[in-house]
Each structure stands twice: as structure tokens, then as C-alpha cells.
Length: 576
Image (cartoon, rainbow, N blue to C red):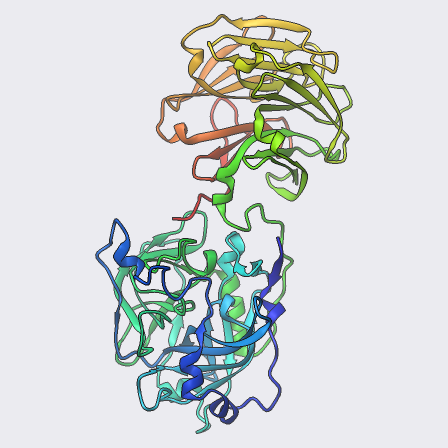
């Protein structure tokens, strides 16, 4: 997907962009005609506030009021990618305390453009909509790692950086912003405590015919899982409220208080369904304080490279990850992951050897791969490069030999379509026999029978060992994955049962499935573990267990043994 940084659409003003120029350009009519700079539309398609049509309406709604001196509207001109024409846009912004009294705060997705101007306590219905004057934007300061995916704000971890500060010039009376309004907000931190009571003030672009600010006082917040962001439920926060400060200790007369977040972050601060009720706000860590310091002191903050992201469009994407397999597919000695998606795409995620991934590559995409029933990664040709076994819905079994470059060199049919292998429910591959290769394939059949095929290669599935006769217990073995979790000469197998119990069978061999160790008792949580695979995603043995949950969250448990290892969230759950 096309990614662009916040700097890509930023155009510096020349020395002629003053308060006088801003007053001349931004007439009352032009300000009133500006549209929200937000991925949220101005109104739902049926013209009704989402807060009114929701089946589960929360009690709290914002209400319009006369505003406060430290919150206003930021106007600028940006290019509409659909028409390639410049258009007037607006967001909400706030006055932040600074030595020269000239710093505002908004969302990074609102920053940039040309002819930027801040109007504190903007009131579109008043004879004078700018009671304190117009303050021209002179410079933007933000973290350059924040970016857009296509035309929309990112939904990955970099959405935590959706804040931007601007230095503004004086008004036409030569007053600094802070002097003109008589107050400023302090910048505060949540320090890991996301359960707060805040007041949120912003300027919606919909259901607001007089262009007045909306306020939601005393709303409680919680963390958006997987992000350094606050979440609130309060109706009326349509497009245009991006950048709105989330304030503790607000004095509604002076406008003083402490801002601990600004509306923005995941998808620009809300859900993809464009609800006006659910909003998010980024919070401020040490990096944010560095950006703030640069804004106050008119310096340039240190820049950092942007790393690879597994979920630029959010964790919801991963609910479509149908099958996973582990192995070294690109020949760099690190464990990678192959994912088969519901739409038939097959993607390789290159492991970084540190419990994460450094990039991705599409191997193929076709309707054929929609029919992949189960997959397993292993080394079935003794080349030290990983291969993939696929059982298809019609019972065909195929070996894809890896080329060591992140693709497949050869396709070999191990079984023609048949009724027997149509009943293969789960497979996993590991080292369960005497040689050093991960070429032993375990199969759980629909009737609960458990088989082990040793020394599988291009010649076929030649050596079958029955580990369990058909039985009702193993019919409930929902997911199997192989790894060396106990450090033995033979690998082990982890089983997630239908009731959420998690078991490890240690030292599996052709003579038996091994000794059972209960890792977890039955658990409703683990019934939501949808896909599992294991490998050496960190240094050492292949004992790192990777789980994709039903809500898209993807978790790595490093150094798993007879108990789960340390938990690392690779992909957050679908936002909600």
C-alpha cells in the first residue's frame, strides 16, 4: 500500500504569510466553507447522528457551548487527492504553554498544507468569528514517522504519533497567542494510567450549523488495546474534531488545565464505521516531550527511521489470516512465517531473529489457495531450506519445495484428491524420528485418529505410524503445532483443545504421542486461539509459540516450555 509521511504534503509559507495576510485570505465566508480534515465524513449516509441510530446508545453526548479561549479551529489549504485541487480544510487545536506563547497542538493528520491559521475560540455564528484574532502558522514540528496508508491515517503503532505542534505568528495587534487569550494548557502524561476523567472540546463539521464548539465534560476513558491511546464514548464528535484536546482540570472560564491527549491516532481518532460516538486520543510519551521541546525552542527534533509494520491498516486485517506455518524460507538462518489469507493470497513474513518481522513478500495469490485446508512447514528435501506441505479441501496433498529465496522452486503431488485425506483435520511438522530434518508429519483425522508420517519427502508419505486409534477425545484437538519446547532430542507437540485447554506432549516419537503436560486448564480465552504455529523466532530452540486470536490479535510467547513463555503482542486486536 502507498504510504506517505506527514511531511509529504507540507508546504512552508514564505515571509509574507502574516496575520494581515491571513485576515485578508481567510474571510468569514471562506472559513465557514472549509470542510473537516478527517477520515470521518461530516455525517452518516442517512443523515442521522450515529449516536442516535446505534442499537446500544451510551448515555453521554456532547453539547454545544460558547467555547473556551485555549481551544479553537485550525484552518489550512490542502490538495484533494481525488480532484487534485486545493481545498480549505479545518481541524481542532489548542494553545499549549510555551516561553514565547506561540505554540498550538493538533493531530499530525491535520498538519501541513498552506495558508495555515489558528483561530482561538472560533465562533462561526458571531459577527466577529475570531475574537482574539488570526494567528498564522509559521512552522510545523512533528514526528516524521507518522504516515498515511493511501489517503487514510495509519492504524498501526505509528498512529500513536498522531500529534503535531505548530509555531504561530502574532495577531494583527502584534500580540502573541498566549497573551491574546490570557491562558494556555499544560502538556501532561498519563504514565500508563489510561483510566481518566477528561473534558473534550472540539469543532464538529456536521450537525453544527452555527460552527460552534462541542464539549463533553467528565467523560471517562480507557486504553485502546495495543496502543498508547485513550478511548472515550461521547456522541457528537464528527469530522473536524480531530486534534481536540482531552483535558483534565479544565477551568471553563480561563481555558487553563492539562491536556493529556488529542483526538487522533488509530484511523485518525475513530472507528472505520465513522461513528461519532467512539473516539481515540494519542497520549504523550518521552518522544512527544522531545517534539514539544523542539516546538517551544524553535529547534529541529531528532529524526528516527520508520520500521516495518505488520498491520498498517489495523489488527482487524489479521482476522483474515487463515493458516500459518513457520520455517526459514529466505535462507538467512532466521525463522519466517508463511500466511495463507482467506482471499487466496500467500505471504511470507521475514523474521528478524528478535521475535519480530522485518518485511513481507507476496508469494502468490489465486483462488486455488482459498481451498488450502491445512498447512505445515518443514524441511522435506534435506536442503536446510524450509518447504510447505498443503492438504487441500478435496484431499489432495502437495509439497512445495522452498527455493531458499522466499519462494517455491517445485510443486510435487504427494496424494491425488481422495476421500481419506479429505478427513485430515490438522497437520503439523517436526523432528520426531532419528534424522536431523523436520520432515515428520503429524495428522489428526476427523475421527480422532492420530498418525505420524516419518521421513516425508518428494517420494510421498511412505512411513505411517499410528499414535492414537480413532477416539472421541482427540476429536476435540482443535489446533496442533510442533516445536522443541522441552529441549529433548525429539520435538514436542502443543494441542489446543475445543474447551480452551492447552496441553504439551513431550518427546513425541513413532512409538507414541509422548507424555502429556497440562499447560493451561480449560479457558474461555483460549477457545479464541484460531491459528497457532511455532518456531525459533528468537535465538535458540524452536520454542516460540505464535497465536492468532479470533479478534486479529497476534501474540508471540517466547521461550515457551511446559508453561507459556513471555507474551509479546505483534498485532493488536481489531479496534472497537
